Image 1: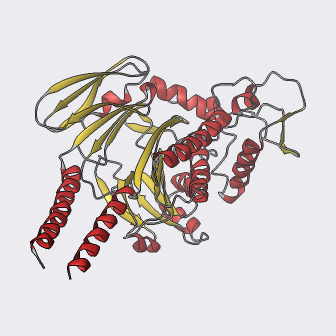
Image 2: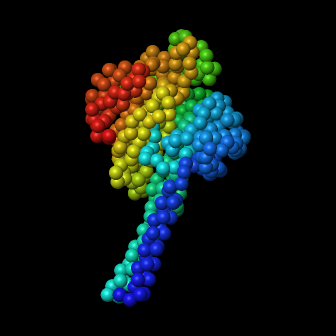
Image 3: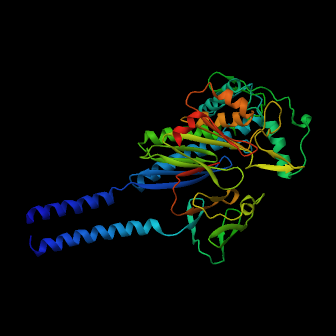
Amino acid sequence: MNKYDFILIGVVLFVFIGLTIFINFNSKSGNKALVYYDNKLVLEVNLDQKRQFYNVLGYNGNVVILKENGKIRVTEEVSPYHICSKQGFISKTYESIVCLPNKIVIKIEGKSNLDGVIG
Amino acid sequence: MKKVIVVLTVLLIFLIGFLIINHNKYYSRNLFYMDTYIDIKIKAKNKNQADKVLDKVDNIFHEYHMLTDRYNGYIGLINVYEINNTKKKDKSLKIDKKLYDLIDYGLKLKSKTNNLLDINIGYAVDVWKKYREKGEGIPKLSELQSNTNDIVLLENNTIKNNHPNIDLGSITKGYVTKLVGDYLKSEKIEDFIINAGGNVLVGNKTNGYKIGVKSPNDNGIFKVLKANDVAVVTSGSYERYYKYNGKLYHHIIDPVSLFPPNYMKSVTVICKDSSLADSLSTTLFLMSIDDGKEFIKKYQDVNVIWYSNDDKVITTEGISKYE
């Protein structure tokens, strides 16, 4: 083996390690809330401690979303029964908020050991 | 030696590249049909394939949504609304074969379920819906009773025009979920998960899918099932309901008593066929847990988890294979 072989091996190792870190980094970040209008991702919220209101447009009008203490909820929307406002905060990866009349869905993305939830 | 290392290195790089390029990815779609949020996730080769397949899935749900819609008519389509409310004077109505087959399936369930699954229950469902939306009072039995005509299917995809009051809500989601699962498999999509409002259907993947069953009391998971190629359906009293005089009135109506019973907080059925799982979960919800244990004995490879009113979890023996 000469020094070029070592360089080659070094490069291969570097690529390997780089890839591993990249893939892990991509799947490891903390919980995020994804807000969809129909099939369009309209808002991404990092679920940190800071208190923050957001406004997105739903089918019936404005949908107001509040994030605080690592949780997220809907506080105002235009719908007959306000089911999603009444639901309150969610924070776990298997939880979601669905506002059918507004076609708004909030999902939590993060590490989860579940593929789906029923009930 | 040097050559060997160079060749190996090049091969390794190709292998990594191949793995990255050919790495199948998950694609998902949100659908809003049948008064339900439907969430579909599939593993596909590329975005093109995923889009094509998910568009078709959207079409299937959309078509059944329109065919089974009780509240809206669509020009050029004879759906459940039209059958129930038509102003046509013809003796019979020609309907889409898909709707004919679904109604036929629903009618046959009645005798199999001790009359607990009745798709001609629209009248009582509407009365309860009005009370639920008001959030107070309960209907008198006389308000719930109707002299709705029987549903009569005739030959050649026709139905007798006698204004029945069809409500396919208790069977359509499971039925269509099954069709969608079959379609995905025909497209060689093995790894998928469909969640259509309390109806979950999973495909195949190594190590199986982990499905959490939510507690009816809070948002916690009280059981995790591990499975491949199986449908899991829950019926519960805790999603659409109102309380009056301290009593809970939910949306699953017993077609015999015409009232929503409170035998349990929820029941979950696990079996291969998602349409069977859907109809059985409704049926079991409408009988006591003891009666349910007896009733389910005649079904092969169907497993059940009951969540009782006093928060006990009761399961059939076979459930252990999903643990």
